[in-house]
Amino acid sequence: MADYSAFDILGPIMIGPSSSHTAGACRIGKTALNICPKGWKSVEFILHGSFAHTYKGHGTDVALVGGILGYETYDARLRHSFDDAKEKGVDFTFKTADLGEKYHPNTVKIIFHYDDHDEYVIGSSIGGGAIVIVDINGIEVEFRGEFPTILLKYHEQKGVVANVSKFLADASYNIESINTNKDRITNLVTLTVEIDRPLEEKLKDEILNQDRFLESTYVEV
Image (cartoon, rainbow, N blue to C red; front, side):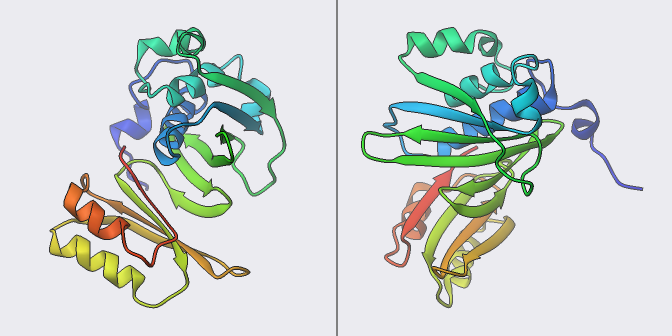
């Protein structure tokens, strides 16, 4: 028999009505906000599957907007996130689309529009308020937004995982999960490392500012 925590049974502390459609959506929005650089001018939500069919009735829309405003799942301001966004000059739109069979029914693609380019995050709400981020700007990833996370993109080469792991081990960090995903056409690799506590600034600089990385991001949850 599987072991379940109280969180799995009761769900998160949240503004309802649904842990999957509301709390999970808020967490996806906030995680996407932390992943993508600041300075975006507007945001577009592309809703897939169940999200697309029920987002208004289940509060998915207000939760997603609350997430990109930085609200937590239990923040009472979620109920009027649309008004808050308008007061802050945050321009947002919603669309529905079929993103493909490989995605969970509760999935959203969040596109941040900048002056000269777009960046996006695809995330799924998988139940009980839990989420998984599955795509960042076309690179497949897999992390759940539960731990501080290091995201690194680089040309395939030896020693990267060992290098990052050594930095963390020398500083007495525990690795909660580590995953690599390789684009077999471009030979670009995305390394995702979840760690047990926030990165100290000096260590963050040592890891992220290596010349070998094409892109490096640290996501604080």
